[in-house]
Length: 111
Image 1 (tube, rainbow, N blue to C red):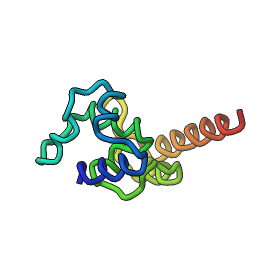
Image 2 (image 1 turned 45 degrees about the horizontal axis):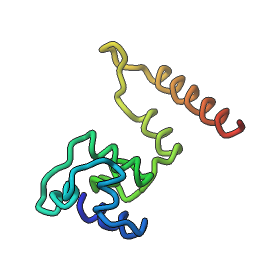
Image 3 (image 1 turned 90 degrees about the horizontal axis):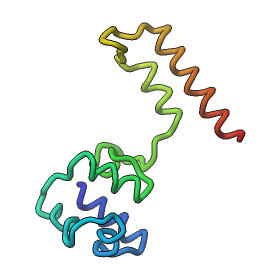
């Protein structure tokens, strides 16, 4: 799935693998290695995702959404089993964290 998504993104960006490799300072044919099923490192996945403006999960085929929607993040935080310093967050803690993030992103949009 990674290689197929990589091909699609390269085509949409009208870039060859060689161009992308040069721009990311990767060795020649580094991206073609994924055609044979080689798995990219987490670091390389993140670099490529950032290059194309998509999430790592999209590149890896874990989601069809190319970007993270804050509404989804909202739901994920409230429904998740987050912990801090080894202690699980309570429902109130998760809701407070969610509110802090909402306020932060809303303030960023208004700047």
